[in-house]
Length: 119
Image (tube, rainbow, N blue to C red; front, side, top):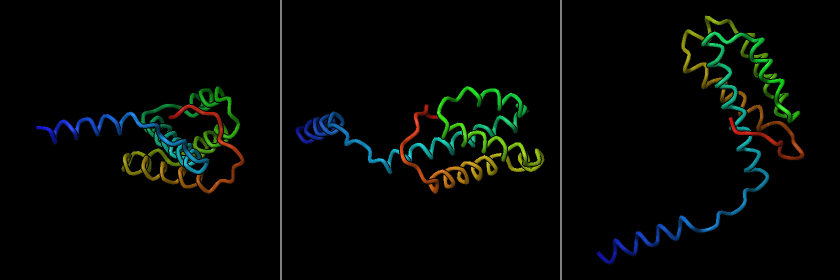
């Protein structure tokens, strides 16, 4: 019983410990994962019949220039693909595009982390 109590107290203390701040590389990685998630969401929207005009209207509301460039690039790519291709294996297409844009983002030079909301 004492061991269980000590383990529980230890877990509580670990959970309360301060997290170390993320390095700039870790922050950029998190941002790029978010960009990949946006690509997956935009692809899903296209698969569900959302028109490019609507996607563009929504994207114009993005204030951060870096994020806006990524999102418009994703929209251009996703809407250039044949809808039959996107619907043939929808899950695989979403994951492939998510990975493509995450990787592309990670390879993009950057001076600072953009201000963004997670997708």
